[in-house]
Length: 124
Length: 134
Image (cartoon, rainbow over all chains, first blue to last red; front, top):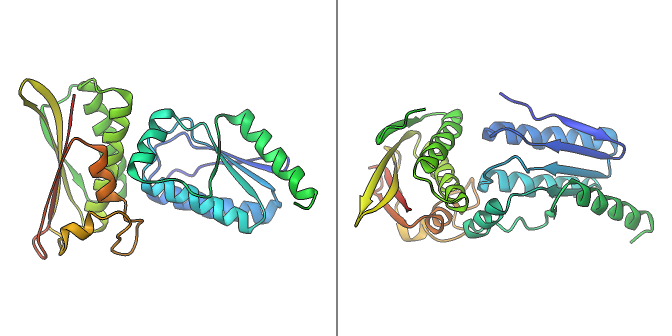
């Protein structure tokens, strides 16, 4: 089974999904990320899905779960790089990815996480 | 890779779901579907492959290039010998789930394709046919 690597950049955990994942690989990533957030105290998680050609309900549910788990562990998650055809398909499938923050690309995702850090340090 | 006009793939384990997505991608490219239509068809195939494996206890995906009134299309048929579906109308309702998923697989897939046909009876398995026309 493939395992998706998790990179640490300062206070952010970075995940780039570049393979067509088996369901079990997605579940393992979810567990690994929860463990890494708790272990490193990361305040942000960025998931780059620009290489994914489809997101079905299983992967969509995984993205929603990771966002929820991270939030409970006091980290903000941002999903970046979704291809337009994937976004169109997700909406028609009926998945709104509620609670998942998104950004067009890595740079904007980093800005979003930085803002979230500043807001939380101000006590908002 | 030379593509056959019709064929069958097994859906007996998780890695078969990945294989079915890759097969459907190659078939959609052969048919020269637009990127959005390819993405929709592959996503529908992924949902239905998982249904066949999880709810049907495994089965097959059959593909065929078909033609209607001179219009080429790709038809995929997912078949299992599992427990079947008692209430088809209910199974096609958004958000209704037999327990494990989000209840989007069947109704969501139906929205992603041009033709959708579901046949099932309790104890007699399930057969879902989807078609995307070029």
